[in-house]
Image (cartoon, rainbow, N blue to C red; front, side):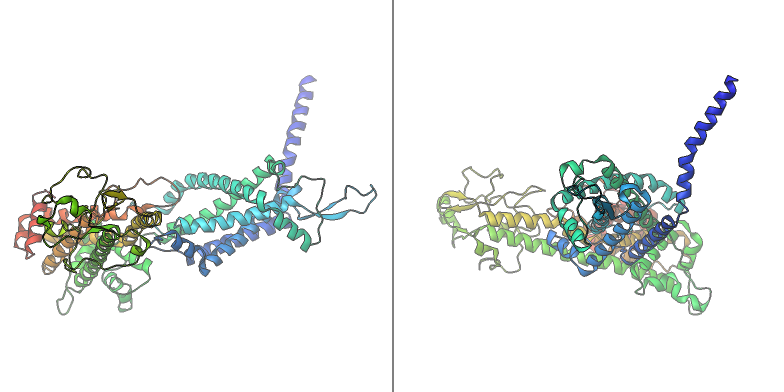
Length: 609
């Protein structure tokens, strides 16, 4: 019947459509496909080993492009890039072999176009296979380069604790999207590079392996050859597969390495003494162990009353608060070290600002400036913008003391008025001024205000002359280095944030949980350390080149949260002080601190800070 014939045709069509699927499954069991899968597993293992060997919990922030170039050509990074290029070539070879067709072999038989039809075939170079291999090496090297530039070896610890599976599932869609987009970007760059330099490896390999060039095919280092959509699609697909597998290995390592770990506060057995939290904090373990210990301290201080009691407990026999002493001493040492680094950085910025003022221009004042007319004073400006001024010159004229901070907010107005810098953006420029009126000087240590910096002018006679181009260029380059140098000071601020939070939560909890009063003995030192650090941090955000607003963090796969650590530290520091003052209240008036700190503490008590 007609229905049976129709049903038979449908079965034949279904069986015919299932033949390619069955053939694809049969190809998975062939020897070369199994070998390729094993080879790619070895590649993933090698990539994972490099992830373990090159990780860092403190990001490396180069302060200049020259420093970044130095890191790229460092022998360790050269080995990293070379291995990743080789691994990328192996992945591309496996993809070419499993794709079959025109990508499968490097050497293919061909017939010369000028020879007769019965000529003996010769072996020719398969440029499609070569293109695949070189693209894999290029993507592998680019991955290594971006791994260095984007600080992908940096391990950011999550703020919100989640299960490993949930963290992986949340990051997987972003990982696939990032890999596909990056593969498209890298394949485009490789096509451009192959267009200009593709003939070099092609000629070298054909000469070395004694392979001919098939003149019947379009060469791929031309526009017509690179416009092959099938080639571009397969290359992009290979690159996306390579990046997805490598990024998954990188993501799994980050998730497992930053997982929270509980350290016992008191040992159960004598053999576990070296694994206790106070012992680890006061020793010199690997940096990631110290980060995990501080993270555990932060968590126990907030969520574990039982472990807090172990911190406040006394030793038996003896009755000494060894746990609290060890933990508080290490936290205070970390915060004091950060304070000293910030003070040194601010002094360097002040010295840099003074040097820039002297490199611009200075006014040589007579002994009695009140007796000289204003126009004659203007003619005594010294030109210091030449190349000789780039070399270190004496800091100040003989009338100024060597320890004075001219232009600093901590210097006196009388001293600041001795140096006059003419700024076109200043409202004083172009107006007639009395010699008794103090000219507006620069804020802080530079000749600009805020984030906009003006070029100083040099007065010769009554004309304003711009500094040389080289001086201006070097000055701008030096200003561009400041943000990176400032960020590098806070590169390890994460452990200081945890020390702040852990210490403040323990102090706040001691108001009701500390039965022996062990925290009261160190409360003045804790308050002095926190208030001193807050003064230094506030002074840091008033420096030039320092933004008062955190940069916007894009939701990309590569973490850039280290750029906002200084803002997180400032917020954590103020929160820690408010946490302590809110709990203790007026009882803090009995704590012995300096008069300056007592005023600041009173502002916190009155919620005016």
